[in-house]
Structure formats: C-alpha cells, structure tokens
Picture 1 (cartoon, rainbow, N blue to C red):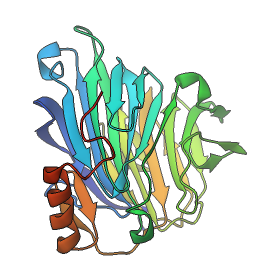
Picture 2: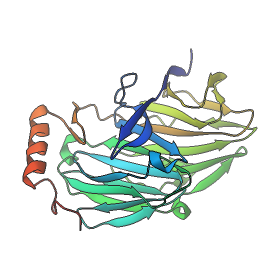
Picture 3: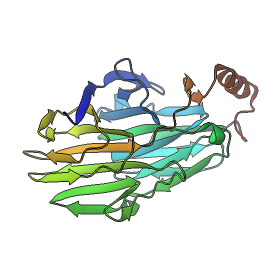
Length: 278
C-alpha cells in the first residue's frame, strides 16, 4: 500500500494588494485539510510581485503562521503588536475573536520567499482573546539526523520543541533539508499528515514527489525520505478538529450566521478592540 494517498499542485493566485503567490491548500484541487485551512507560498525576486504587500485587513476564528525563507516582512496589528520576520523566522498570530493586521515587505528589491499557513481554531476558542508572537530564526531548534537538517517550527521532534505553541491542539511543522542522505520520519499518531516539497525532487518510501507538489500521506507509516541532491520540504501533521467550517474570505467560523456576524462587526467597527492600526 502506498504511503502517498494523493499528490497536488498549487495554483497561481493573488492576495493582499496584488501579491503574486501559489495557493497550495484551499484551492479547487485541494480544499481544507482540517485543521490546516490554507497554505500559500510566495516566491519572487521581482518587487512588482510583492511590493504592495498585505495592507490592513481583518481576521476572525483561526491562526496565521508566517515562515520566511528569504526577505523581511513587517507586521502591525490593531492590538498594538509590531515586529518584522526575517529569513528563517516565524510569526504566529491567533486572530480568535478579531484582529486587524498588515503585513508589508521591508525591502524594495531582492528575493521575497516564504509561506503563510492558516490553522483553524475549535469552536470554544474562536471568540477568545487574540495573541501574537515573533520567533526569530535563532529561536527555531535545528537537529541533524542521519545527515539531514530538520528545523522544528511547531511540535516535538528528537526531544526538541518548536517555539510555536498551540496548547491543547498541538501540531507538527518541520522544515527538512535533505542532501544525498535518507531520513526516516516516524509517525507521531496524528490523523492528518502532509508534505510540501518546495525545492528539488525527492522520494517518499520510494515514490517520487517533485518540486511544487504537496503529498497527502498515510498518517500511520514511517516516512523514508531521500533525495539525489539538495531538496527541501515542509511536513505538517495534526489531529483534525472535526467541526463544521464556514469561511468567507478572512473569517473562518462554524456557521453562516457567525460569518454574517463577523462581517457586521467589522463593518460597524466592533470586530477588534482597536479597529484601526496605530
């Protein structure tokens, strides 16, 4: 039996003020992968593709994780948080009951490359208080295993723990760099597991996965990852929330009535504690 259940390619998209990106999860070929709602990759050395950034916009009902590989992105929000995420760093924002934030590039030239992941919240947390954390590259544990480098962004691996915390709904996020070696990655028992290859080509238990492909994986099997030359991938794993998902743009709730309320709250200025950014 194949450990790869299916393979999917992202599709070109635009978001924010016209930032060009690839939408990997939450596109016609691959809908929500509970609890992972969306995964975008943005990668360009043409400033026209990213310079307009993501001006102030609202969120409610979920969390965002921004992981940068190259370039710098600045964050400001309606709670008063400010920060910049640089290459190798992560920003984690729990929008919960409501937040308005802006993500703008802090560069006018050069490569901008990174990911944004949306992670759902269970019903009993959707209207909790928002939260935000900035995790520089130096705070991301790195482990060398069988010659491969594994960066631990969230969850636990080889007795190391990533800085992104989601108490009670922990998820695994690893950035794995392979050379000419193989890496065995045991299952941690989560029912949802997937891998996105963002550089090079590799094999998973002998089956090829090419650059730009996301593989949905059997959650119970040990993964045997190998590459002929440098390859990099993001591995995600989690326990699904298994609750209804109602989404309208930047709002992710459980029912359409809750979505309508989120829209009304935003329009009336009641979505976030401070509706406008300082």
